[in-house]
Amino acid sequence: MCLCGLNIGCLYASLQILSNHFSPFAYSVHLFFVGSLGASIAQGAMLAGVITGFKQGASFVAFEFLVGAGLAGAYALLGATWLVIKMEGDLE
Image (cartoon, rainbow, N blue to C red):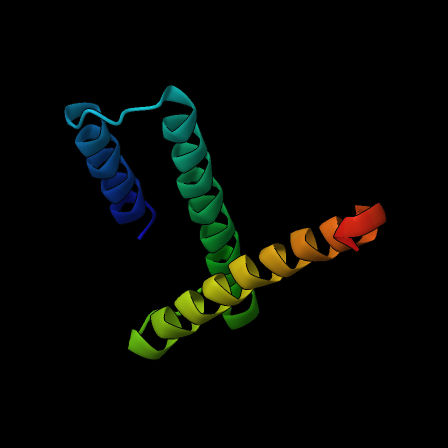
């Protein structure tokens, strides 16, 4: 799963290089997003593996992906909450 996300990110980056609208900053932001998403999904999959005792089977793999996606969403919610706390002035 993580390798698929990395391959999609590399494909997108190569398409950006071939286009006339390439920006090195946008390239690094996309790679950071793909790497962070892959790491959070992998952490969730490991957490699910610990919970289930690293058992094998289709239902256990589905549970790992579900927990991985949930952990990625939890990290996004944590970051959004931090931004709301740090906002001041007219942005609030």
